[in-house]
Amino acid sequence: MNLIQKERTFEVALIGDVDVGKSEFTHSSQFKMRKYPVEDLEYYRFQFETNHGPVALNLLCYEDRHLGWTMDHIKTLWPACHGAIGMFDLSNQATQFHLGTRMSLFNKIFPSVPVVICGNKKDIRTIKPENLTLHQKLGEKWGRKIISHSISVKKNQGLNLPFETLIKEMTGHSDLRIITSPEE
Image (cartoon, rainbow, N blue to C red; front, side, top):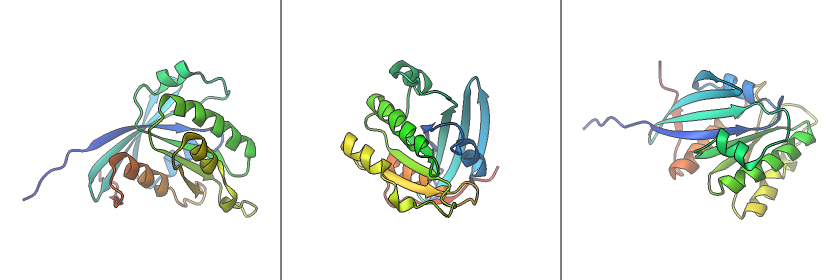
């Protein structure tokens, strides 16, 4: 019996400072993506085929050059959110600090959504990704486990990990694997 599985769709926030690699991350991905311009926002739709059926992520990224986020600001940007990817630049500690601040505010509104933290630029020789502790600090503060990945957008390394981890968490399928991106 051949059953057609309905695509599951999730709303995901992409959070991080300007110049941490968010745009490059979305464009460098080996997965099928469509960009939809929205005022002051970048909205991307990613489609994946998994061993548990098709999944789509609507990824919303707000380009904020200031730390002036408020609770109302976040509720307006992401009225319904199923997960978040937080990004910072491994070579710039200020971006890690800013991400911690933003993610803590985000967590007050969405305390139970899965979160994946990504440190970009692991290809820089002076960077030691194993020394990253932001995900541990946030996890302790929030009382739950936060997963992190070191990636390199420039070298196209580890870009599938944040997506696969987040989809596993959102679907509850710990054995989930991304098989491929569906053909056009």
